[in-house]
Image (cartoon, rainbow over all chains, first blue to last red; front, top):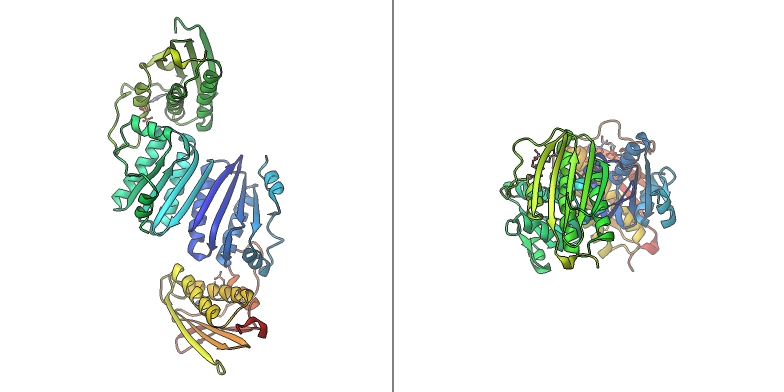
Length: 114
Length: 114
Length: 143
Length: 143
Ligand SMILES: Nc1ncnc2c1ncn2[C@@H]1O[C@H](COP(=O)(O)OP(=O)(O)O)[C@@H](O)[C@H]1O
Ligand SMILES: Nc1ncnc2c1ncn2[C@@H]1O[C@H](COP(=O)(O)OP(=O)(O)O)[C@@H](O)[C@H]1O
């Protein structure tokens, strides 16, 4: 873990991570997000990937698991800002169309319902 | 929850919270920290209270519980930067001497073992 | 609250977030209409937050329930607060002492007592009342 | 690795952190000695990280164990990698296909195949080997 910031904006939870997302930390991230989602009424999760310097397939697995969890509960899940290495990894496995990606701050603000 | 940042510095986990620490979020904070401490080898926890605008007795309870947990596992727990309202609340219940408080960045750096 | 020139009642349901909101609402009213001193306001904020959190956690066995704050103000002299619930009521054991440093809880009533001049818990006609009287120096009021 | 002018072996124990570190060590060596192009280096970084993570997760039933990377370089032409463990070995079912978008895992071998020209898994003499051959254009090398 390098630096993780969780921020609440209305009913949205915004997760921002600075560093590499690999096997080393995906377990931690899953546990933290589970803890946070259990706590109260989070309607939307946004993960900011703009400062992720490297991501492997366990990072992809983490994103897919959050997506599944949120969708099956009728909630929203978005990615925000993809760093070039993240974009490359997601592109390789053809998931750039699968996730909902917020392209700019206006889209972010709209998604957070403010 | 307003804004929580978790940062790893060596074996130390630094928790920084911006906002009020009251009953509304102490449950969340406990769960998040439990999740993080379970994950791997955190030898030291530092909680930065410099941007806490208000703290009630459930916040005190949270700090005491982290202290007990870390101490009983032979690990270190420090507070860093007390905002005036936090200092007042901890002073009221005579806990300013009880916790180990890092007074400046040099002390913080030393506590994080770097 | 015999001599209060101003009386006002605030109500909420005791969810964790709403309890804190109710405390803030009362403090904001006081800041707007009566009190200038930030320390006095902060003291009242803590007292109210502790008392409302107690209703949230203890009065209705953890479930949400009715929560009321009755405010009395004698401008230039004092503020009185009654934090009221209709739940199970205080057991005989309401302690106003500071527990040991390792204790995770049990500091709420102690804090309310420390920040006020009188602090009392009562049960009357099905209402559980935490009564607070706080004298506030003449210079701490709005002019 | 018949024609490799440069051969080098890197070793670690397959903890999650150490597996990633081993991948980085190999990539840093290549960046220092051979390759200039950041995209080629990033591709090799992902390949190595995926293969080393697999050893960490699958080879020894989740427990740590020996992990080795054998590097062959034919400067100006290609890089070859063998990621080796001494664990339980690949079952017959090693898939190199991209799983459905909802699948949480199963993308590692697919990624390795996509980023290389040849990718193969072998078991020989108790060693489980992921073999990678990656051609690298003449302009992507250090001059
Ligand atoms: N509104 C209430 N209704 C019933 N019991 C209460 C109420 N407020 C407080 N109490 C009782 O008084 C005890 C002491 O309260 P307090 O000093 O605030 O500490 P804590 O709430 O942390 O235990 C509580 O544990 C609870 O048993
Ligand atoms: N080093 C290894 N030893 C044994 N089995 C392996 C090894 N690497 C991969 N495997 C097997 O191949 C499967 C596919 O691997 P991969 O495509 O990387 O996806 P994932 O590891 O996410 O399942 C794994 O689930 C595992 O059963």
